[in-house]
Image (cartoon, rainbow, N blue to C red; front, side, top):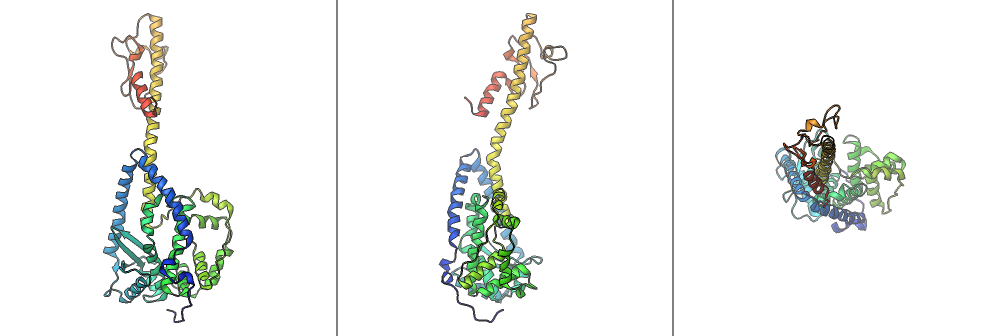
Length: 400
């Protein structure tokens, strides 16, 4: 834990109400417009609203199970459990004007260095992985940065926005850019909570270099990678990721320290083209993966009924053409023999009017009623007569 006097913070970090970056608001408006259009299209589609409710229910169940796992398996931090961490947490909450601190948990993660915020049924949670706690220390300024970052997500209602703005968040380019702006804003929340830019960058270096060597890394040297390590794939990674690169985040934190805007190196223009085919959404986290699955399901819910109609129309069209072919054979037999055929077998077979029995795609067979006098009486056991099929085809294709 550093004992150095914290540097003064820039004026942009002197109030909890000024911590979100301006571009987050811009992306919010764009994502909101896309999401409204998508939700309206879904609500107006056949069964769309029903599918949305079903998937929302399963998402609620999945998120509930995740939070139940935390409550049952992780360690609830309190005055009795990890009191040093709890005191640090209360200090951060007070600094960010959070009057009711969410529940804080420590979760064993098998060596992963991470933390996240979650919310379910009106309850908010902040989770710190145990190895991250070991790496930073319970009462360190670096831990204040991490806790402040996660509380920033809750203060900014990012978890709620994941649900309401889900269509916008999976939109290529827009969704990842909006999510990246969240992380930048929350890094500012963390820096404000820590009141120490250098400690904030050390926390990021531990996240990048590991708990054994992260503190020994030079922030400026790591930040230079954001400018020096460029190219098509780096640009594509940046455009499709829901997190700014760690070197970019350190660069932005150092810019807060100096007050000089960070340099923004150009991206490869071809990366933008490829990134338009990469959907947004961070599918690495369980909750985000559920949201991604739900959105895919909702899109499928819109597409499946249309696909089924096209499939049904195609099957009806094949059957209708089969009956027309048999009807032509019936009329030809009537013309040549002077009397109508009595069975379909008289029309189909080698040397007859139709070489091979046509196949109904739904498994129906073609029959000729006893005493039939017109080819219009030929019927499929599944679809009916030509007239029946025509009515069904018109209904499937929206024709009148």
